[in-house]
Image (cartoon, rainbow, N blue to C red; front, top):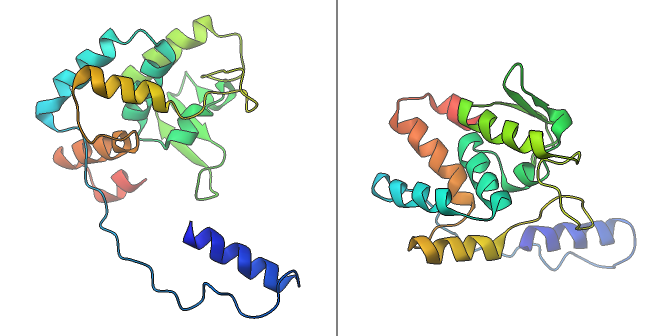
Length: 180
């Protein structure tokens, strides 16, 4: 939020909508510790069993694809069918948070989830919705319910991304590959 405010004020000053210096200049931000939470091996069975029992197929499949691809939440939720290559087992993300494109290899489990959804789909989106974007948005309520049902604590949706990276590291995958 600080960076957004600072950038907005800088833009306003640059284009003459605000006079003077940026009031955010010189502010020292609090140092925050990076989060290291991921689904631990002793939690994994409970997590997977909870997903198998999940009645909301959109939520369940979103969680599976987040876990199997390690992609950011916004990219998974806004996934288009045109960006999935079933033959080559690849998902092309045209624009990531970093303003770059990215191609993600799809595991057999991710392909299975996608194939099942594709067979029933009548939309351009993998996760269609009646929202103004046309696709599902962050499933906060479903996530909270899932955590209550499974009894898992202090787990965030972004931790799914970290979980994939952690297990790749435990299996001696190179840090360069994990970072990609």
